Image 1 (tube, helix red, strand yellow):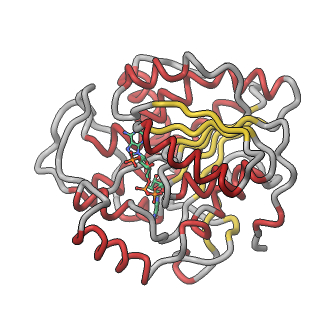
Image 2: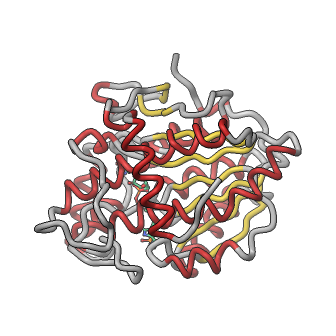
Image 3: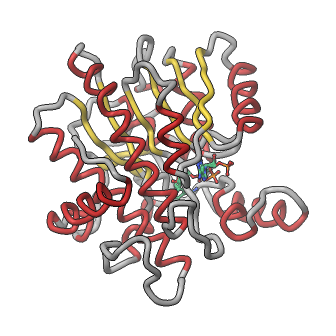
Length: 308
Ligand SMILES: NC(=O)c1ccc[n+]([C@@H]2O[C@H](COP(=O)([O-])OP(=O)(O)OC[C@H]3O[C@@H](n4cnc5c(N)ncnc54)[C@H](OP(=O)(O)O)[C@@H]3O)[C@@H](O)[C@H]2O)c1
């Protein structure tokens, strides 16, 4: 059964933090629809002027929107630790921000940039915000962690289980992206299991957008979204993909639909590339309990935080 935007119930009283909210991306659309339905949305991103632009665009459409901005660089663990200090209450964390297949670099903490930004930063952010999510859940709120993965999680045969601060051979940008998106699912399934075992009333779910015409390709391939080449690339991507608004639907489903923990939402069309969202499956490697546990333990060590 598919799901649609009209299925979102009133979100008044829910505080939802969405990472990666730059205009034109999935986080912007996710934040817009949640704000439209009364949620207080914390717009989280690494660039304050871009957050202000998103805030203005949402207020333009939804004058009553309750928004806050939170500057956070997921590629910098110290920035993640600083950012959470100003969050006082939270019902839902949406780990949406991500990068795809950029040129090789390492984060300030020494991780390959994709694994650092797409997995280790969100892993730490989730752990630091979990006490607030737990408080919300124990007060009877519908508390969740929703992490945005990708069909690309299927494009790798191995989980990223090596020492993350050591280079493992020649950098291959697409396999590294695939591993980081596999990590999103291993993380979600392990988090949900650990939450249930610890009797913590918070659910972990995942979503993927299929293929959506956002800034992801230009950001990764060119490192920018302005200029003639970027504009040609973005126009080409948009011509063959679904809109960012449609791409955000699986995330919105995972945030608002009545679903059990460990549910994965994605488009219902051919190859899950586009279409109305529904519950979808993940690769067998994403369900490998040993890989889930090993990635969790390795991540705790890497970011210096054990939870739940
Ligand atoms: N679009 C697709 O077809 C597709 C398919 C599968 C999965 N996804 C996933 O969807 C998610 C959203 O991507 P998108 O398509 O909306 O791409 P996007 O338009 O490039 O948006 C990515 C967002 O992440 C932010 N971000 C990047 N690095 C960050 C960092 N170090 N700290 C904080 N924020 C950071 C970006 O901020 P800046 O603007 O400052 O760079 C931007 O707001 C990603 O996790 C991606 O892997 C997308």
